[in-house]
Length: 388
Image (cartoon, rainbow, N blue to C red; front, side, top):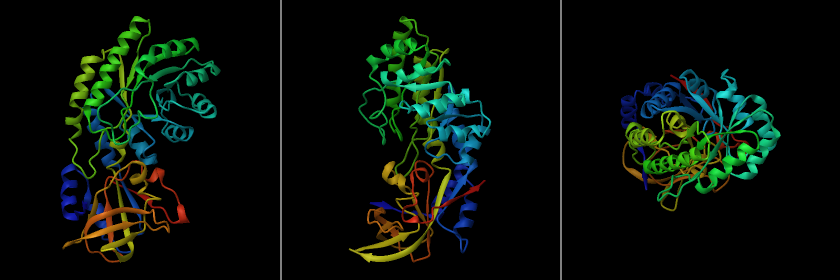
C-alpha cells in the first residue's frame, strides 16, 4: 500500500535540496493551467551532474541520452562540461546540435544494424561497444580505424531493478578472444565496459565488476593489449518511494575500488541517465473523472500508462504522489484517460478525497517516462515547461 505525500512536506524537502518549489506551487494553484504538463528544472540537472561528478572524481560523465532526450537536458549537460553516450542515429543528431566533437562521444549499443552503424561512423563517432563475434564482423566494412570496447557481464547475488546484464555482455572468459578478433579486423581494442543495470541499489555489484575488470586488464596486458578506457556504465539510484543513500555515500566504495584496482593511466567514464534526468522533471495532472468501485475511490487522470506513466510498465517505478488536500486518507485508485482497462497506475493508494478538477503532482518522473509513451487514443500528451 502506498501513501500520498503532503504538498507542504514535499515543498520543505525540495527547498532543502535547493529546488525552487515556489514555481511549482504557483503553477499548481494556477487556474486554467493546461494539464498534463511536465516541469523541467535546468538547475536540478546541473545539481545532479555536479553531485555525481564530485562523488566520482576520477570518472568522466557521459550522459546516457536514452532516458530523456529533451534538448534542455542535452544543452545543460554540455554547458556543464559533460559528454554523451548515444545509441542511435536519432540520439547522435540530437547531441550534435550542441556543436560537440562527435569523436568524443561513446556509442554504447552492443548491437547495431548496418545502417545505424554506417550513420554513426559517417557522423564522426570513433568509439563503439561490442559483446560478441558477429558484431565484430561488421567492423570489417570500415576503413577508418575505430576504437572498440568489449562489454562483459558478471554474476551478482543481487540484481538492479532493471537488469541490463540479461540482454548484453559477454562472459569474462570470452574477452581475450574478442580482443584478438577486433585486432584481426584492423581496428583497435580500446578498453572494457560493463553495465550492472538501471536503478542499481547495491554498490557491491559495481565493486565486483571493477575487480573483474582489474583481472581482465592484467590478462590483456600479458597478451600485449593496451587497455585505454574503462566504462563503468550507469544505474546510479534515485529515491522514488523507498529511501536511497545520498550519492556521495553510495559512490564512496566505488571510487575507492577504482583507485585500488584501475591504474592511473586508464581513463574511466560512466553513462548515468536516470540519476541526471529523473528528479528534474515534475508532472502536474488533473482529475477528469471519479467513481466508486469495489470499496475504492477511482480517480481518472488526464495522463496515464500510455503516456508519461509508461515508466511504471517499462521501468518498474512508482512515483511519489503529492497532494495539497488534507484529511482522512481513503483507499484509492489512479487510472489514466484511455479506454483501455490496463491503463491503471496506482491501485491501493491512500489518498485524501479529491474532486473532479483537482490536481496531483508526481515527482521524479523525468527518466524512462515521456520517451517511452505514445499517443494511444490520440489523446493530448503533456508539453514541457522549462523552469529555473
